[in-house]
Length: 268
Image (cartoon, rainbow, N blue to C red):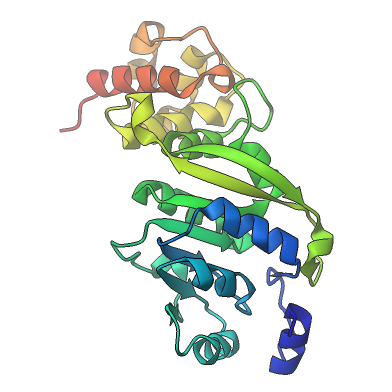
């Protein structure tokens, strides 16, 4: 039974943001990219179980999360005697088991940004489908319009690789956007960042005026940085890369600035 037939049989009327992958070649490509053989795999938004089924055939164990109660019951029955543990829980509130080594998911659009961040914090190698626009932000280079705080955070945690784009025609119902398959390799240690939280805090501040010179963006973001205008002016010219613009800064350069900021304003 294919995805559309399953949805109809279950009487599901998809709501906004509920788009089911309905392409065997795309599902196969996603699972292949996951490198799941004999791994403990997490799937976020298992849906009808089309991806889950292929994961189950290759992985040692699969944790399949699904918030829709009808789909959850369907999955419980479908995988009742298998290596799949079906869980009716929102991923954003879920405590990922310690034994998870991979994530393979067609990520729900509305939680994709936060989901990638959580997976990054846990350093879980992932193969995911996300909106193409989100993928382009993740893969943006310094100086690009799409080079954002999201780019910095994702590339701090992962080395991202785009495998292919996926047309909206491969979904039911068909969304208004295309998607991309991304492979995310955990690699947070490569940047040499001592304090990632300060890096993210300073990046968020500077990127509110990302096309100004860093020295000026720093002072303008004083409310986010919790410093006074006078304090900002006092150290702005001492900041590394102060004449460059935030949108052109690489992660290591933003790390230099965040370290300088932390030294100038140590926590009490």
